[in-house]
Image 1 (cartoon, rainbow, N blue to C red):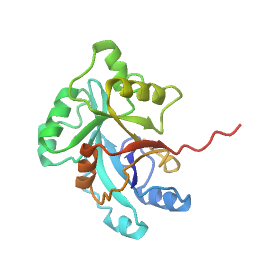
Image 2: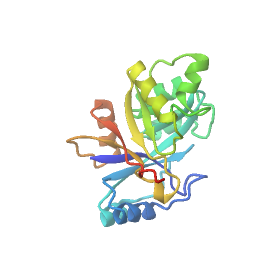
Image 3: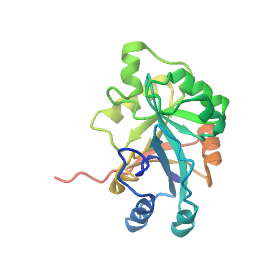
Image 4: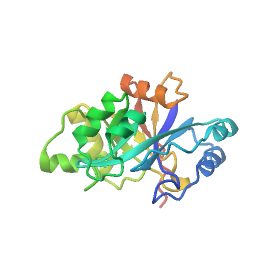
Length: 214
């Protein structure tokens, strides 16, 4: 399966994409995606139900969160009541070590995203403050990265022996699928299966950015 693990809808304060429009775009452009994960900023959207869109468009649509920590932004997959009770997702200075520990205890999977980005990326903080124990996976390809950011992410992930995944970080419809993650030989119908697959580690990041035109 190929999944975009990092997207935002109008549920995020800076998102301008409706979930159905993402689905329509994937089909219209014949993008090689089997589904995507909505990682809304500083919240978990427990209310929205997208099962009718899954059935209509033949895509897997999952929900996760993007939280903000003292070492940059982190995606959390498998958010549940235990984790929501342990962490204040609206807090923009959550301690990264606490997010990693509480996610693990709750059976979730937490991984820093766009780590090569200035100010909000993990590796920028590493330069100033050193590494954090407990990090094992990062987003090495991000569709919103500027030149040099993903290169640094890939370099540092290899150096630190971190696993790497990809996501578009799309906030508008046309950017979904710019980066994604391949899970070879696996079926991932829901968020629980995704968490298991991430823990298993058999995945790789892939870039599908449109070719630059001169």
